[in-house]
Amino acid sequence: MADTNYPSATPPNQPPVQRNRAGKNLLIGLLAAGLLGTWGYLLWNKNKVSDEIQQANTEKDNFETDRNQIKEMYDQAVYRLDSITGANNNLQGEKSGLQKDIEAKRAEISSILKKSNATAAELTRARKLIAELNGQIASLQEEVTRLTGENQVLTANNTQLTSEKQVLEQNLQTSTMEKEELATTVDVGSTFSASNIQITPVNEKKNGKEKVTSTAKRVDKIVVSFDVENRIAKSGPADMYIMVTAPDGKSISDATNGGGTLTTRTDGDKSFTAKVPIEYTQGTRKAVSFPIRQADFQRGDYKIEIYHNGFKIGEGTRTLKKGGLFG
Image 1 (cartoon, rainbow, N blue to C red):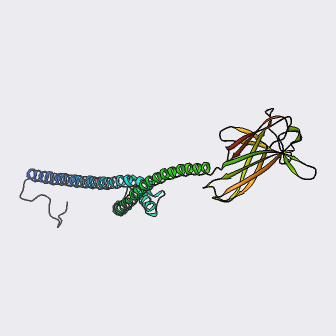
Image 2: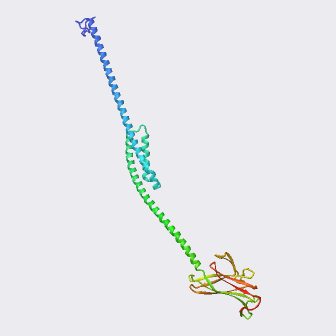
Image 3: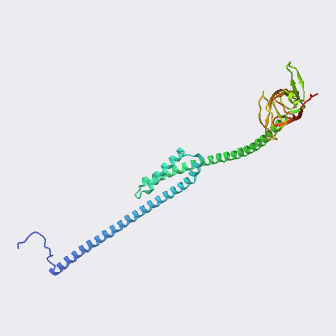
């Protein structure tokens, strides 16, 4: 082969065997260096990945811790809120604007905490909402305290008014009873008394003259006269009821004034012969006279009873005979 200017791979003064050995050693050294470098890179990369995994785990733990703290803060706020919302509803009756705003915040916070992939910004938003929520809960607590105080005052006032009402009702009941008793006393006390009762049988002549007689067949009318008076009775109209019972025990009905039934206070219902209206002046004695007429008068005793205000105030008897004159 012709000579060239390139250097020879084997030094000219070195034996061929030594030159081959040196090349192998160099190759082994290069391979070892490369292997060590690869191992070093792998070890460095492994450490880097481990650091990243540890950092990710740390961040995850911090995220969970942060999220749990926020949830605990939220749960505490909700507990406070629930403890006073019911009382506020009972006191106020319907939800206020504050309560509605609180419910909106609760819904947003709950939505964030339910997310498994919530972002840091969302958690920051949740913290801010919880802070606002706690402020609103404090305001609501003040409102509940105020309403509770007002309710206690109203309850106390209501209790007092109820007590006063009971006293007034008792007094009214007592006054009503006393008034009724007084009215009954006045009513009974205003009953007239009758005196100077006269029962006069009269025969009416054709010339218009009248003559007292005790002969039954000559009697045309029986004139009942009496005086009434009462010191407490007020001036005004009053009715006197006259009951005439014939000798046969039957009640006589006046032909002119008819008759009817009177409910008395002591003797039950009784038939009366005539109702005689009078006009009374308080504190005076009033003379009353009234004729009782019928077609034929029987022989025997005629009983006259006088009633006023449901009470019998006087009575008398007159006997008619078969013949003869009275007086």
